[in-house]
Image (cartoon, rainbow, N blue to C red):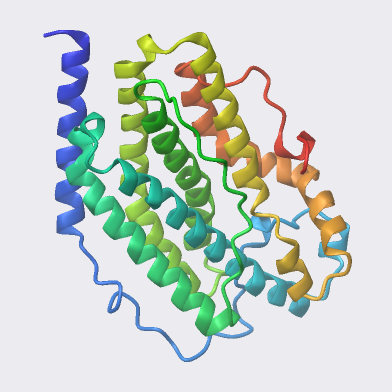
Length: 303
């Protein structure tokens, strides 16, 4: 058997395991959470202080404790909103590819992935409407449609974007679910999210590697360089979405845009970014899909 044939067999076996796990651990999103009438109260925070986009800023640490708690409520609302919008956008890409011959081997698990992402949107929307009073709007700027993809290029772009977005989001969900200081209902939502995302991350990593193995040898250097630039920009834009001036304004913090700029450039933000993006950078370098010495998001135009 060829190396590529063996790899296809291995990917198929992994997908069978993931499908079986999704069937075995199926959750009804309308009964999985017994929603309380109110959040738990002053004994808890709503967002881990060390994960806050404002962590490390003097303007944040100087706030009274109750105002930091209130800022955390809007920050969890911002996190759930951006994750909902991001999953909605990325699932649109999956639906466009779902029955394309190039991804036929993945289609059984893709039905589970779509189902589970829909559940996450139910959880995030319900929490946000009940306890924050709204969903924050999607500020993502869509890319102009293009034609003339090389074989496998669009598939790799979409599945790599999904994997990267979910890798960044899981960094926060995992931290929040483990933090006993955080309100129990926030932790439960994050736990449900993480348990299914852990399967999606395995899927995404294997599919990205599989697509590169199948189509990468046929990519021109221009195609490969275009993918590198697209993924680098996607990482930066996805990270910057966590720094939302609307959240800061709702929390009663002055000069929200200046605050966002300072937060993105803080040492604490750079450290969080390095931790969150570490698995992404490692794989993209392994696959020759990373730009050399890519700057952190705060150093890029528009940050």
